[in-house]
Image (cartoon, rainbow, N blue to C red; front, side):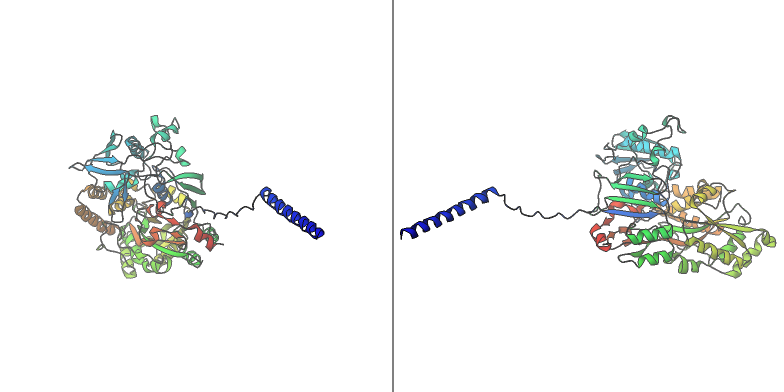
Length: 556
């Protein structure tokens, strides 16, 4: 009995020792940590868009599509355009106009910051306006003939005085982009062509921005691309999924574009792609082709001061000989035949204006009236098409074939865009014909009538016609100066009939932007018909939404 008691006691002691040891070990060994879930990475919302060229970043210099699209995002304007041809407040919360239409007073929004943090004031508006008209490039022609003076009444009030009335003045202000005066002045180069203002900051603005817009410049590689990043202190509205970073690449080379698009390195293509290329890209999962009426038009611009196209009957012969239907049905599919010099979607367009159609009998009849008819074999019409827009070659070859049918010889020449701009600056170097898309600078017929046919635009890429007609200039100026819209539009209508009778151009089709884009992960307002048909305003980036998770799913 004694032995059993001893054994039991020993066992009990051992068990107690084990328990105590276990408890001690438990207090000494740290508990196994609870696993922390791996956070889902936040994907940056990026967007890449291609254009025919890299944008010019100085808003007093550029005016092409890429540049205009950049300005809309880097800079703010006093007013913002709408689809109906009107404007709404933007930097200016409201404005007054004097009874005679010559004095306009704008009351600025307070607290608007430039990208460097400085507040935007009336002095910046005055500086930007004077710089705009002094440099005299880009869109400056819209204001320079009318502006007498601009002054700051106080920090948030600006007064414009005009020399003469200008009916679409408010619409023209969508091209007056406001720069940071202090920042530009810190970066001027002296000496320069503008006296005390040196070069007015033009060299610095090649690779920098001085804006207050929703995006700021992040990176520039000249001749290749620019990158914008979201400006977090922007005063205005962003859609919830607006891109954080956007890249504009400057190429429309078909193979390059198709490759980048297929890899997901390009989200929205330029509008200059051959239709066959667009069809191939639209076959990719999540992609589609979009057709967007833009307010512009495709013209064959005819030199009216160069033999043999200086003869009106020669021009009318070409107008009747051309096969317009093939262009819209086979080459630029999705477009609509033009009717006169102004697109049907632009306020002030006259739908009753005459439009030439193919009629070889009338073409030969007109040609026989031409002073050049007896010696047609001595003349050759030189036709330039833009190298960056491959489908234009098809139009050029069709034109040459059509003209051959009535005995007119045509020399078709492929010309790079920058060479076209240089050649069109002088009448002696301009070709007989050049094919070019032109869009309105503000949403009214007067914009097209002025930029296409007024003498002051003759040395620019927007007019190869060289009309140089003082009477027509005066009529355009009178129409634009008319304050009453109904009366102004009636004058626009008369001008459209007058221009068609002169036959300085072939009006081929109303411009429709054809692009491929990934609708699966890009919600683009313009593709849904919600864009403003003013050059550049299809790409107000803060209104586009990007869903990177969907893109990752598509390209996994």
